[in-house]
Length: 108
Image (cartoon, rainbow, N blue to C red; front, side, top):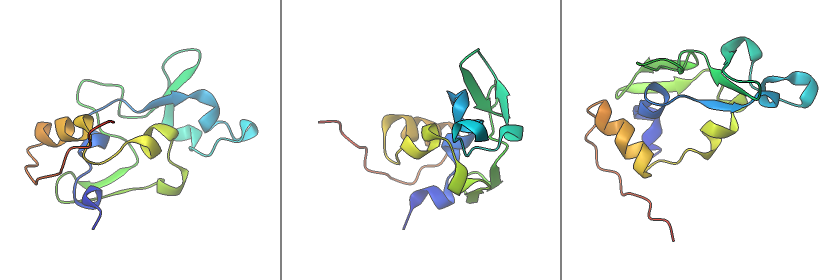
């Protein structure tokens, strides 16, 4: 079972930023541009994540209970590359009081 389905802590902990072209349909991007905000000349972020208490606008459900991504098939490379069990994952889970054990991923 995918532990992310009952978590969502990463979507409510970190800024989800990525290169602007991922939200530009003319450049082959698939992230809906209306769900992003410009943060620099080259980067955009998912709305809701560039603030002190982040929560991605595409996150549906209750963190730590049952969540889903409203744009899962069109999510950014930042989201696609985030892995369950990494140090950042465990940091996010701790921040939200999610104590379920995940085996940390150790880089070789």
